[in-house]
Image 1 (cartoon, rainbow, N blue to C red):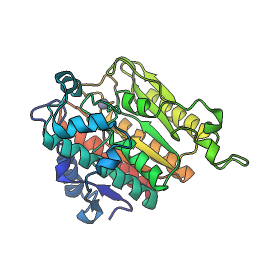
Image 2 (cartoon, protein in one colour):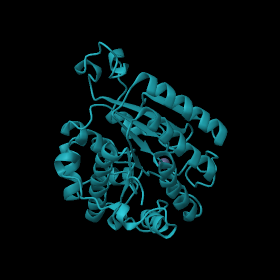
Image 3 (cartoon, rainbow, N blue to C red):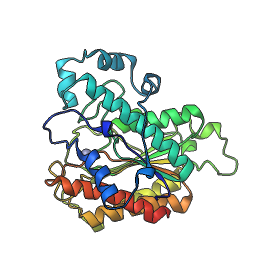
Amino acid sequence: MLPFKLVYSDAYYLPIGAHVFPAEKYRLVHQRLLSDHIAEPADIVTPEPAADADVLLVHTADYVHKLQTGTLSHTEELQLEVPYSPELVDAFWLAAGGSIAAARLAMKDGVALSIGGGFHHAFPDHGEGFCMIHDVAIAIRRLQKDGAIQRAMTVDCDVHDGNGTAAIFPPINDPAALLPSNSPGTAVQADHPAHGVFTISLHQQHNYPAVKPPSSIDVNLPDGTGDAAYLSWLDNALSSGLRRFTPDLICYIAGADPYREDQLGGLALTIEGLKQRDRLVFQAAKARGIPVMVTYAGGYARHVDDTVTIHCNTVVAAREAFA
Ligand SMILES: [Zn+2]
């Protein structure tokens, strides 16, 4: 049995028909985790959909209303890049509920993964890039509202820039916000003047989205970046971020698309390099006693089996780090 929980439902499947986004990957990852004895059924927690009130902590009432009544404009539907349906809305609400559950379980067990989520291209008032609502931001805001956390750090290793995350949590300019929360003499109220969220995004510079709003730390990687350079950049970003900011929770967005065989990515990481990446994030968190919640985001490998392997390896890396 794993020393942490996995959040999963067959209803994570996104009903989008034939699409470059392999919506069946969640089911395939779940199956592989069980068949390879990485996890057992008792490790799995079934999520509930997010409440509308939770979604409204991040998204505008107008946008939520359009989603729930099927009244997106044609342009808004095109921007989403997945075909709108009420069933798709349900799947995204469930993903958000899954991320809330994973965040709560991470606070309890030190780490938890949702076998889904990571919809980092969703903005408060619109969706884009296959992302309807921002499950990770919703989870952060919900845990802040509950008083379970004050400060969170997003570590986004999807090959695409986390533009929605950066728009929802723009970088904090107040230097007081960057002091560790346990610094002597630092007033608790003063250290998160705005939203208390520090954002790190490692992404391929010349890739979607064209406009990349600033994160707290952006690492714009050149085309073809391989394992060694990537891991070195990630190590630097984590060290620098965790020197400047002490979060109560790390939200790791573990996209599988920096893989060299990815159809929508232009980096050159190997499957082993991606596992090393996962280890780096988990070890950085574990060494500092910071809980980590994980979501999966993108993954468009030519062979879906590779995407499944990369996502399963993230569970293995967590097991190794948190055993
Ligand atoms: Zn991506």
